[in-house]
Image (cartoon, rainbow, N blue to C red; front, side, top):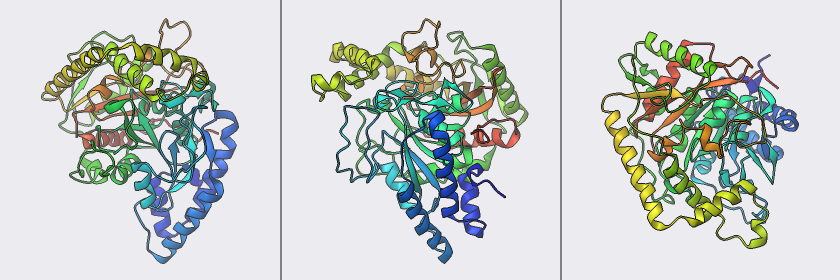
Length: 467
C-alpha cells in the first residue's frame, strides 16, 4: 500500500484526480506522521488536526464532484510561525508576543494557498523573529535534524525543513532573510527556493526590509514550481511586490540545462573554507550538470564578503523588530537577539546608507557577472549540520551565524533567486546542498536546473523514509 506521506504534492494531486486516494486519507497520514516525529525533532509550534481534517473533507467532496477549487486542493501544507495565518496565533518564536487575537488575516502567500484549497496542518518552529540560522527559541525550544537529532535542523525555517524531510506535509512556507530557507533545507536534505525579491508578496512588511523573502520548501523542484505558481502572484498589501509572472514555472521545468553557461565557484575565490566532504559532493553534482549539456566554467563572482554591510542592515532590522517592547518584555528575548538588537540600535542613518551603497554595488557586480553566465553554482553551506542548540559550531571561532553561511546572505542583498538542491551526504550521513543562483527574475532557470538534477541522479537525498 502506498505511504501517502512519501508522495509529493504533484503525486497527491494526480492521485486525487484519479480517485486512488482522498485528501482525508492524505491529511490523516500526514497528521499521524507529524505527531510521531514531534517529540524527537520539535518541528511544530502547533498542529491543527481537526481543522485540517475538516478542510480535507471539503476538498474530498470537491474532488468527488470533479470540481477542485485550485491547483493544490487537498494538499497538506505547513506555515512557518512568522507568517500570519487566519484563526491561528503567529507568535514568531517569542514569549513577548501575546497569543490573544484577533488573528483574522492571512499573509499573502497563505491566502493564495487557501484560495487553491491547501490543507493547513500546522505552524512550524522558528528562532525568535527569525533572527538566526539555527532554530531554537525561548518559546518553543530546540528543533532537531531528521538525520541525527543531536544536530541542528538549521534555520530560521528549521521546523519547516524538518517537517518536509520527515513526511509531515510535502509543502512548507518558509522565510529567508539571509539564508533561512536554504540553510535548513540543505541541512535536512530537501529542496528550498528563495525567489527573486517581490515574487512572493509579503505582508506585514518585514522590519528586515527588502532582505526578507518568502519561499517554498519542498521534496523536489517540481513541487516548488507548482507552489511558486500559486503563491507568486501580486497582492495589493505589498507595495514592493512584482507583477504577474510571465509564464508558468511548472511549464518551464522541462527546458533542461543544455547550452546554459554555468559558473562554478567552489570557495568564492578562496574566501570560504569548505569541508572536503561538502566540496566533493558539490563537485560531483557540478560534473553532472556538464554531463547534461551545460557549459561549466570554474569562475568566481567579483565581490568580497559583504558581511559587515549585511550585519548593519540585519542588526538594525532586529532593533526595529523589538523597538515597541517594554523593558520587562525585552528580558524575555533570546540573549543572542538582545545582543544584536543592542548593536543595531547604535548604528546611525549614515551607517545604514553606507551599507545600502555596498548592497547596490554588489548588485551591480552580479548583474555584470550574469551577462557572462546564466547561473552561478556554489556549495549552499561550507559545513553540514552541527550540534543542536548552539548558534555556531563549537570550536569554529565564529561569533555569529553569518560566519558559517557565507554563500547565502550575499544573494539576499542582491535579491537574486537562489535554491539549494540535496546532492549527497558527508561521512556521518548528513546532507550536503548545492546552491544554484540566477539573475533577478530568472527563477525559471533556477527551478529547471534543479529539476534536471533531480531527474538525472537518483542519489539526490531526502529524509522522507526517516522517522
